[in-house]
Image (tube, rainbow, N blue to C red):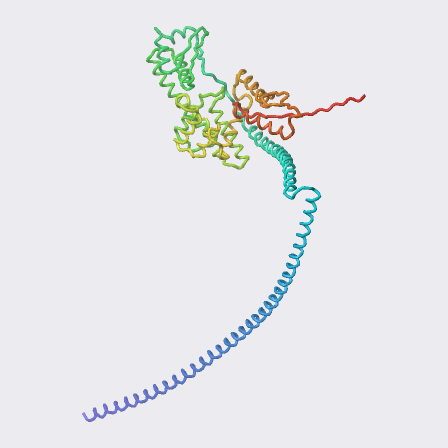
Length: 492
């Protein structure tokens, strides 16, 4: 036990010595770290102080430069202010001189006016009135001359441009026109077929007339039956029905009803196809189905012998080509041109003009107001407000008024010529008047001592306005006033 205790005591002494040595080493390291930290902190503080001193020096130099600039600008402003002050003083001096001169001139002018009034024996107001009257007369003459020159120049320029556009347009468009009437003729293989069409006690012809709504005229015309009706669709159905009956050979009321229904379906399909073809030819998409079907009915409608559907297609093409020349909306022009006469498809069944009915149809089936207004404006029922309105009106006039497009009776033609000459001759101072160029121009010869140049121009406008108000005519009519003065002298 004594040995163990001695050993334990020795170990404890060794551990205490190690502990003291460790503590001494730790304190030595701690002192060393403190010294290093103090040295590092002093170095960092010295570095920051150097940087602060450098920044302070640069800022001080910058402030000194700015101060020099401010002092320089103050000197410049002082110089400019002094210059402005000198100029203002100079201006004030000149203003005083001008006021003195104005007073002097006012005195001189007053003396001159008094002297002029004494010499002319006329007051200042009277002289002013006389001068103003003379100036008004001179300005009136100059105004008339200027207006006439501008009118001539504008007309020449406008006519030249219009001829270019219209000639280019019409060269691209040439549509065949078919002349039709309110009757159709059905050829028969023999005169015996007339009796079969009439039937026993007239039952066949009564059935045909009742179903089709068309009058059958069976007279002495050899091998032919005439169908009469103002409704072209009914007339076409009746014609097709009779042709099928003649080809089939069985003609009795029951068979007539069957063939009539079949013919009606065929004509309705034809109407639909023609409406779709017309829209497709002009590249018009999204046209309402009912509107397309109504458009197709125009295939069987004529106006003054001109097929209305072909006329509508032509108007759409012409309006589109003119719109392309002018850089306008081609699609709207074509659409409005195609639909402008659509009211003629129903004007024989409903009350109202074809313009009113066409606008109602277009509005009912969802057409834009631009298209509806163009339909309303193509016969001046409403004023033309847009370029599309004007294009449709022009294209309609070209299509209807070009030679051969429509049939006009000789009686109407002669009446129009006489009326043109009557309008021209109704003015005083007219020598003679002539309707020339198939009624497209009126030439008026005036007395030169009654009309001067300005009055001649006014006369031409007045006659043209009366023709527009009092006559209906296709195309346009030119009014030409001729004023000629001849002087003759005989040498003896």
